[in-house]
Structures are given as structure tokens and as C-alpha cells.
Image (cartoon, rainbow, N blue to C red):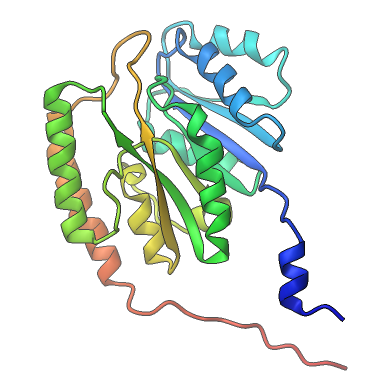
Length: 256
């Protein structure tokens, strides 16, 4: 009789099903190409794409309606008014149907070609790893934005000790059941590794290469969120401090 280890080694687990959540605002020009790239990257997997239209006032709604006609796996959820990137990601999470939720920015700067490697890294981590995060190399942002991001990441890492060099990268894969446990606040999407660790799970990473934005301009500022970011950092630090022990719970069953 084969040993349990031998049996486990002989079984190749099926790839996890994936809900790709794309938060966007006024990205009508970027979405068709981005969605095509996501489709190509996840070919052969069980996936859906959910675009969260965060109160766009350009042609985003019309573009998405046209794309949806030929794609049963493409869904759109619209915010009547813009609520921000974190709210859009959470809306996507709450509407997702698959086991893993993968986030990617709607501006096309995150390259979907890295999606398979990110999913492989998450699956290789087993049940103890809840999140795989991209970490950007050769960033294409302006000098001021790169400087602000470098400072914010260094400060965050030193305080939260989340082992993540670049928590602001939009490309992440998270197990949906664990993702739903994270306490929500605006700005939440920048602290997902720390929130996964707070629940007692590991975080893993891959390096990804950023791309230039093809169309339009960034909808997110730099210095206007500095004070809010500082308050968020204190809040997440407090959340981590208030979780002293992770329960190791087992349901008791009685036979007969």
C-alpha cells in the first residue's frame, strides 16, 4: 500500500479558480487591451473578470457593455459615485465567485503576464499562505511619486514588519475566504500583507516589472494622501497590536 506521502506526491492539485478584480475610474481607453491581456494570461484556468467602475464619467460604461456582449466571464459592477480604490477592490471581493481573488490596476501599468507566476507562488505556499503580492522593479512613475512611495514603504515596513518591499503594487492574489476576514477601511488595499499576517497567515512575493501608462493620466495623487496614509499606518499598527493570539480551533465531533 502506498504511503500517504507517496499518494500526495502523485496527485497534482487543480489550479485554483480565479476572480480578477479590476478597480477603475475613467479608463475607457485602457480597458479593452488590459482585459484582452488578462484573458490571454489566464487561458486554461477557470476565471472571471469583474471590473468595478468607480463612478466614471467618460465612456467606460459603454466600452464595458460592448466587451461584455462577447464575454460571459466578464462582469461589471458600477459605483454611482466614486468611492476610491479600496472601496472598489472590496466591492469586487464581495461580488467574486471564485476561490482566489486577484487584483490588478485598471490603468494597464500592472502587466497581466505576471499573473500565472503569482498564482503559482500562492498555490505553492499551501494552506498557510493567504496572499501572494507583486513587488515592482524599474518603476515608470514620476520621480516625485517614486520618492514618496519609497519613503512610505520603508516607513510602513519598519513599523508593521510585514516583509513586503512594495505594498502599493496593485497586482496581488488572495485566498477569498481569508480576504473576507480583513477589517475594512479606506486605504485598506495598501495594507493587505499586514492584514493577512494579522490573521495568522503567510505572505509570499514575486518581482514584477511596471509598464508605462498607455492612455490618460493617473487618478491618484501623491501628497494629498500623506496625512491619511499616516493615520492609516497608526490604525493598522493598532490592529496588529490588538491581536495577541491566533486561535487554533478544531470542531469536536462525537461518533454515534
